[in-house]
Length: 205
Image 1 (cartoon, helix red, strand yellow):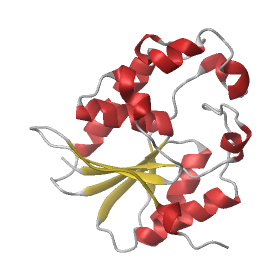
Image 2 (cartoon, one colour; image 1 turned 60 degrees about the horizontal axis):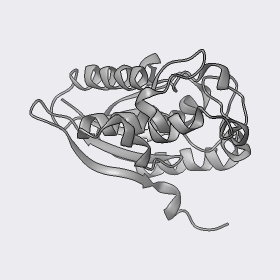
Image 3 (tube, rainbow, N blue to C red; image 1 turned 90 degrees about the vertical axis):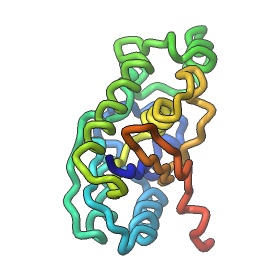
């Protein structure tokens, strides 16, 4: 089974404006997000990566593009890596959603949360973990495989493979354009890196 590099997509204006993008099409990396994606690619120059998989949403694919280019690999879109389906909350302001009573469930008992018209955190966790497990089994031990996804799916995956309760997954921090590394194995999984932020190493303009 492979070593999985879980890459969160770079910054976009929805994050900066406090809006919930969800699976909304047409959400692209902003200029800083593009710089972050290129910095990720520069960091991975020469890495013996076997494959690059990505959520099909634009912001994830745009993050994967410079990495694929610099490693001379194709990007393989995978619906299993897509963002959580937040249903009616899509394109809504986070500030307003936090005023709703249901937000208490999101923050304190996410295992009980179902987004109106969307999926549950538990369903999303099963989906992304099945996808990562399936992909990893196609490769030899220690092979490197990149999966570009989104903050909550990455948190959910890390929590699952470490055996953390679902209700604690939001304690994990996953920044834009960060890398978290899971070494998956038949006898158990290890977290090698959590939330390594490439942007920390960038010189100030």
